[in-house]
Image (cartoon, rainbow, N blue to C red; front, top):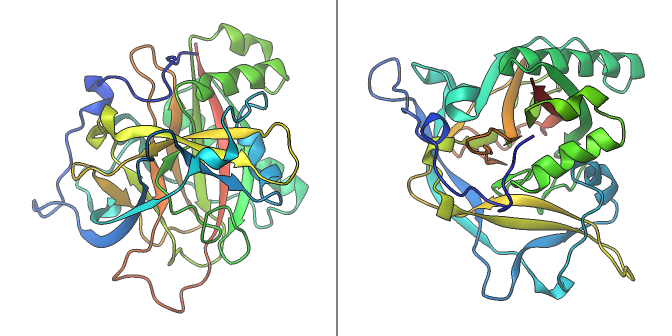
Length: 321
């Protein structure tokens, strides 16, 4: 399934990291909004970027990562500091050549939602099947299996430090945890036995607005993979909280440290009939790929009365013969 030992990007590969940036239909480039993006700051020597997760949230996100990994450092070594930057974020809808999974690591797909009530078990099953078909078409994978889904309401949940939306720039997996997660999915029977013989494995997120209203607050911004240099990348630890634990499970995100070279895109006012598909790990033989992302507020476009964002995120394993 690929993957390299270092938990970060180690070199460039021209087919993925070198992207010819599209121009807008008017020849002057895509429309942009100036907004703040929250990067994690680099930690001081001897400290580790990360934070303790609230015990009430941990069970909802723990299945994202391999279950066998525990935080190997003292909890008081965790360090979290924001590095908030004002950047231009391109409107992906206005690009003359829309971003694609192959060129940018992410793609907006037209995909009318088959479910009207995702709390209904039968409708949820139908929706997960729809999502698997969507990923299979987008990636041309031979096998796609959804393995985790979560509904996040910004008015209710606290997945992020300031609410339901995670505003810290991150990638869900590292070059180590991505293949480890795929291996564990095979060992516990989520993936069929034939998956073990496939040459390449990937994990993708499918992000959908499941509200009846278009997204007007905390949309998702995604960083063009061609603008990320290896030295920009680090590791961020999400560690199981709670008192009196001898061992604490952890998840490892990739963290992205600010560079003026980064290029960002978003898709304003996403509806239920659209889905944003992006790689969080791809174990290509030449180089694993990762898409960094974060919620943000497009400053000129966010109204004080904007409704809370309600999103469904489905994580899928994709395998290639």
